Length: 251
Figure (cartoon, rainbow, N blue to C red):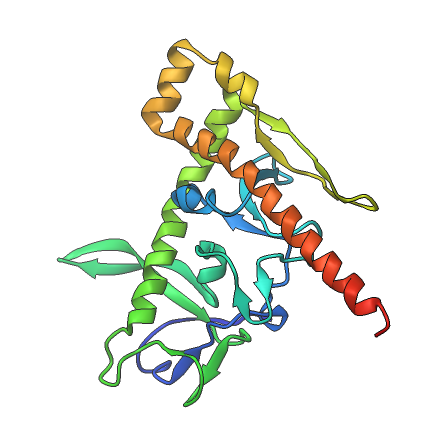
């Protein structure tokens, strides 16, 4: 079970975090959360779709494979894409908020928490990225994590407004994914939603201008563009199926 603690350079001075990948770290999954702040990077390599939660709100996901436990970007302990989704890059960390006195005023400030039970976390010498420098300052790795968490926080807050606006404008549609990978293998992913290209083209007047002013229209186009990356998943799935067939043939 996760056990989060407020990160500090005394209690956690010896913690290290593995930056390798694998099923043992929870990386063998078919999709991960995605945030509007990273859509420009994600859409170059991942298909991005929307999913609706039980409360009716939309959330973005980057599709990694065609089943719940299939990550086609994972090869051994390597992640083959150039950009790592923030939900993966953050590792055992999350952002929280704490009331602190700043310049004599009580403010709610972001703070970092670490899951000390996470399989990536190591305590003491050995492999992994140090969180703090020998004299207590943040390591470059921890500074990177802080940037990732800030992006996630800003993106999560923007997502709520963005997807609600796209929905009101009638631009979101259900789009279960069904692709023929080989003659004998059809992959299907259900529960997905995407942007209706025809509805975007038909949009005009004040609704179009409002989405443009808010920056949500750009996000819609990035979502549309990202769907082309399904072909990348298909090609990798085909490669793995061929490899499995070759291994199954007796020498």
